[in-house]
Image (cartoon, rainbow, N blue to C red; front, side, top):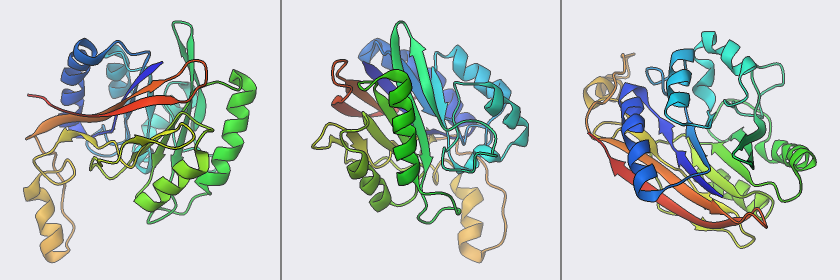
Length: 263
């Protein structure tokens, strides 16, 4: 099984970069069994919309993960409740809209997905470690002991991300970090077979500050007053990873970090 994953798609620049990058990556690196993107920043930097969801599906995206900003567009809550192809962090209270885990299927192959959010430097939330224990057991009961499981861990601290990967090593196929918008260079396979990277990076405008234009951000750093962020339209690029999983074991064979500049 081969999975293509895009880090946080940020703003309209990121949406355009994703649309340009996917066909190129498919042609040069494909084919892929599943394409997954983190969508939480796709709508003007915060949240998602039904229109953007539909456009991603048209691009050939099979599933979408998210993070703390998925709650920023309340109109999207109905999509979270209705759709099985978009996920919110599972360790929010069960009363929140949507689901944080599930199994997606395509052309006879199945993949378990778990979306988690960190606790360090993040809003108060349940333990991602204990939540993962419960969800892995549930997915295994439904999909079998060798079901590949992909984990998007949306977290701030690299220490917490590494700790979760060690905790889940050998029990899931991959733990891929998101949230910081800065791609890390630590992709590797853990001792028991789990693929890992601290952060897959950002698909968006990289000639700015985390996808936001330099000019719109600097006043906040200089005087601390509220300011309106604007998307960076320069340096558009796709950031993500390709993960290959052994069909017989459900464990990772390889992980490749991707950076692809677009127009």
